Amino acid sequence: MKLVYLRCAAALLLALTGSPEPAMSATPPNWVTTWTAAPDSAGPALQAQTIRQIVRASVGGDSVRIRLSNLHGAGPVGIGPVHVALRAAGASIEPGSDRALTFNGSPTVTIANGESVLSDAVDLNVAPLRELAVSLYLPDGAGVASIHGAGMQTAYIVRGADVTAALAFAVTETDDSRYFLTDVEVASSAKARAVVVVGDSIADGVGSKEEANARWPDLLAARLTTSSIAVVNAGIAGNRLLKGASKPFVGPSALARFERDALDKPGVRWIVLHEGLNDISAGDMLASPAEQVSARQIIDGLQTLIRQAHARGVRICGGTLTPYGGVGKPFVHSALGEAKRQEVNAWIREAGGFDAVVDFDRVLRDPQRPTHLLPAFDSGDHLHPNDRGYQAMAEAAAVALTRGAD
Image 1 (tube, rainbow, N blue to C red):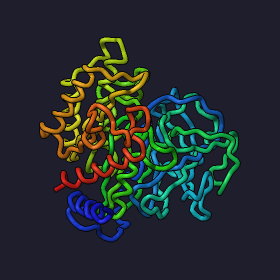
Image 2: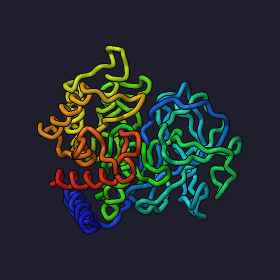
Image 3: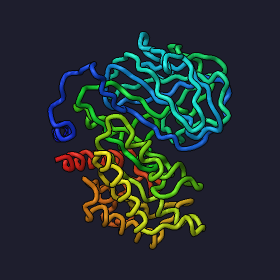
Image 4: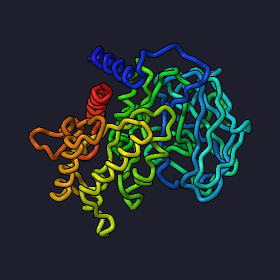
């Protein structure tokens, strides 16, 4: 099985780049997004504190820079110092790997409300799948934090003190959201490219084991470690294709965020789009007529994103919507919702709009009850896969991308 996926990775690399991977080149640097977390909501007010966040690179490189976002803030926020290092274990970092980041040469930066900033680059050798620690200090706290809610990874917090450069520190509290940090980019090989996953809680890894990098995009990245293909996850738990936040749904719609969270990522050559199930669920969960959408509207939304990707020279793979029969509150599974899912899936499979299709529905469904997840792949809520289910999704995506790139 391992040999099969090594061949898949090699085939996808050739299709993305047109030639075998060359030696690393420092001039000019080829910046590729190696990790991302889409900012999805306004978080809590914060006191002065250091936050150390752990991320796992997908593709490697010899220089690093990061992006910080104040997209959902309520005013400007001051951040700095900011450091990046190789993670050792827990909140500790590898000796000698710490690098102080600057922003236009300054160790501190003020990010305007709704804006983001990109750091200057620092030299740091990052291997594929290497974990990094990004530490940022908020000298004045923040009235409203801009976060990615479902981090599935511990963030380590020390109140009051600037300990961004510390090898280890006495943690005062932890969290599992992402704060301000949205992107890590590396200067990689000249042929390195990125696959960006745009989705909802299934892309975000809800139902997988925390701190295990067991989301299906993580597992896809691990399948492609022999190539120079980054896989970055722009999923948002609770996200919808057509409409924005309306409890319990979260974040800007995929239509609204597609350019920022996918098309603008350095190095992007493929997008895997897996959105629409929450749009269907909203019709059963929310009474307002404004929240109701038809299968045709979902299909039109998918077509809009396909056109936007193609206009930028980016190929796009569509994922069929997965089974959710038997789901519990607050979610609802209805005959009408199921009919919409089937109509959308038929279009994804048969219309030829996407450059490739990954049939997640077929991979995850129970043959005896096709509206339900296979029990072996069910995390227990009958909506989100478990680690085995996410592994099956990653394997299917690797094959679909390879075939689509032929």
